Image (cartoon, rainbow, N blue to C red; front, side, top):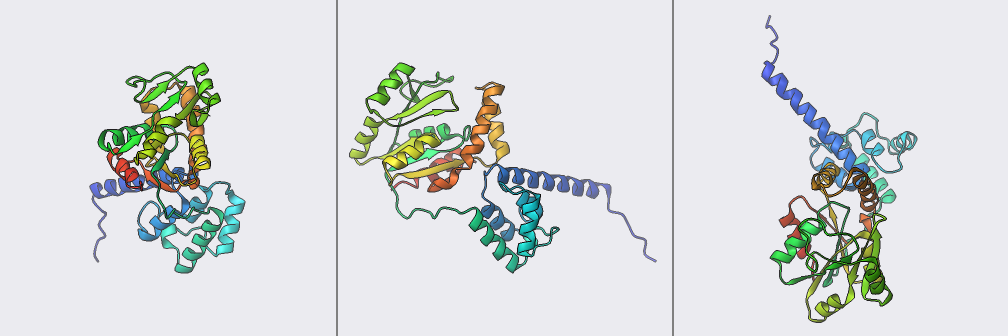
Length: 298
C-alpha cells in the first residue's frame, strides 16, 4: 500500500498566498464594477479570454450584484431568465450562456459606438485625482505641436502651480466679468466650491492657425463644449482601478478629510458618465496615456 504524502509546508503556504491574492483581485474588480471604473462588457471579455483570471474566476452572482441597481431579487431573476446556475463562474459559462449574458448587458448597459471622425479640438476629462493635469502637462512638455488650453479658476494655487501656466487664478469678480462678456467657451462650478472656465480667445486663435488644441476640463465643461462644437473629440481618462484612484487622492495630500470624501462622491458620479465620451484612456502610466491622447487628434 502506497502511503499518501502531504504536500510540503512551503507548497501549502504558497498555495494559500495565491488564494488570498486571487480573492483580493476579485474584490478589487468588484469595486471597479460597482464604481464603474470598468464596464461589465470589459470584465466579461476578460473572463472569456482568460478563465483563470480574476474576471474569469468571479462567480456570476458576484458579478451581477456589483452592477448598478442590481439587487438580490433582480440577480435571481436574471439567472433564471438566462438559465445560469448561481455557482457558475464567468469563465466557465457555456457558449449559449455567454452570448445571452452579453446581449443582456448590452441592452441594460449600452455602450457608445466609437466615432469614425476626429477633430483638432480634443477635450480631456475624467474623475477627480485621475491625473488629468499630469497627463496634460506631459503633453505640453513633450508634444509642442499640441496647444494646451489654460483654464481660469477661482481656487487658490496648489504648491508648484504657476499663474498663466497651469491656470489663470482669478477672483470671483473677474470670473463674473469673463462670463458676462462671453469670454469663456465653457464654465462650471466644481465640487460645489470653485469655478473653472476656458478662455475662448486663445482656442479660436490656435484653431485658426491650424493647430490641435487640448482642453483639460471637468465633466460639466466637456458637455458644454460638445454643445458648442459637436465635432469636438471627447476623451475620458480612467484610473487603473478604484483603489488606485483613492490612493492617488489621499497621497496627493492637498485636501482635508472632508474635501477628499466630497471629491470621491463626485468621482463616483463622474465615472458613471464615461459613456458620453468618444474614447477612453486608462492612466496607468502617464507617458503612455499622453501618447494615446495625442494619437486621437485629427
